[in-house]
Picture 1: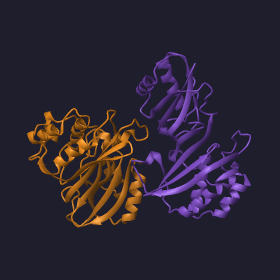
Picture 2 (picture 1 turned 135 degrees about the vertical axis):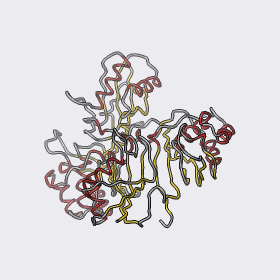
Picture 3 (picture 1 turned 60 degrees about the vertical axis):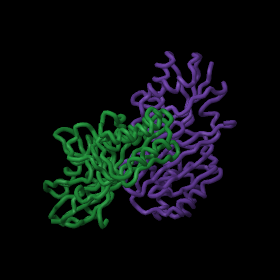
Picture 4 (picture 1 turned 90 degrees about the horizontal axis):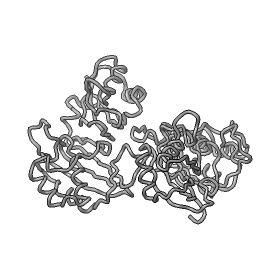
Length: 245
Length: 245
C-alpha cells in the first residue's frame, strides 16, 4: 500500500468544517469524493487538524492509503481539477508506511487575523474589531501562555478530552498596517482554543480585562471566566510539523 | 445642497459591475438603495470609474448631492450597517459644490494580481497563471506604454469613444512571493484596457510574443492583434486622484 500525503489550502467559509457529517458540505467529504473519482475506490483520509466551520487552512496535512500506481504529479493535477476552487492541493508526496497526518504531528501553527478597519475584500479572512486595541497588553498575555499550561479555561465547555495540557512554543501578536496578526505554535490545541484565547486577549486589548485578570483566568481552569470565542473567519491552520520533515 | 464624497472598498465577485442595470445586482444599486433608506429620498451617485463585473475596488470614489443634515460620521456608520458586507464605506467627507467623482478625477491607479501558484484563499482576487513568466520581459512592455499613446489595441472592440489617447504616468510589475503585481497610473482608462494589457503582457511573459511584437501591437491600433482579456477577478481600482486632494 502506498501512503500518500497531501498539503491542502482551503477557504473554510462555505464548509461545515473539516470532518464528514451526515448532512452538509465538509472539506473531508469533498476530498474523499474526488479521491473516489480518481482511484475508483473508497478512500478514507486522515487530517492533522479538524478545523471547524468557517476556519481556513493554508497548510492542512492529510494522508491516505491506496494501491493504484498513479504518479504523484497526476494525483495533484487531477485533484485540483476535480475539487472545488475553494480547496487546492499544494503538494503531494509518498510518505512512510507508518505516517499518520494526525498522530505523527509534533506541533501545529495557527494564525488569527484581526482587521482594525472595515474591509470588503478580506471580510471572510479576518475579524473586524472596531475598538482600539493595545497591542502591548495583548502581547503580555501571549507571553503568559508560552510554556506548558493547563488550558481548560480556553477550551470549549463539554469537550471530551482527558487532559488540557498544551505546550505552547511560540505565541505573539504583531501589526501589519491596519491588521493585527496572532501566531501560535503548540504541540496540540484544544477545541476552540485559539479563538477563545484571541477573544480573551481582545478583552485585554480594549482594557475591559487586565493582564493580571488574564493570568488568573488561565490559572483558574474555568471556561466561564474567559472571554468570548472569536469568529471562525479570522483563523488559519498555517502549518503542521513532523519529525524528520 | 451638500455634496458628499465617499471612498468605497468592494469585492466585485458577486456584482454585475458598478453601473445600474435593468436586471441584476450592481454596486451602484446597492449604494443608492442604502442612501434612499437613510435619507428617505432618491439619490443618484456618480463614480470615478465604472468597474466591470467581477472587478474589485480598494478606493472607488463616488459623490452625491443631498439637503438633509445628517452628520458625516453617522452617514458612514449607517451606510456600513445598511450595505452588504461586500461593500464598505472607508471615508465620508463634504466636498466643494462643483466636485464630480468622475469629471474632477485627474488620474486613476489600477492594480492587477497574478498568482503563480494555485490558491484557495485568494482565488477571487487574482488570476492563477500556471506557466512560468519572465518578469523582465513583462516590465519591458510596461516601459513601452509609459507616456501618451493611442491605446486602441488595448480597448474592447466596439467601445464608443472619440479618441484612444491615454497618458500613462506609471506602469510596472513587481514580484511579492509567489504573486506578480502590476500597477498602472493614467489620466484615463479605456474599456478593459488594463485586462487586455495584462493578457498581452502575459503572452510576452510566456515568450509566446516578443517585446518587439508587443511594441508593434501598440503601434498598430488593432484590438485583434493584442492578447486575450485577463480575468476580471485580478483587477482592483486602487485609488483616484484629484487636484488639491
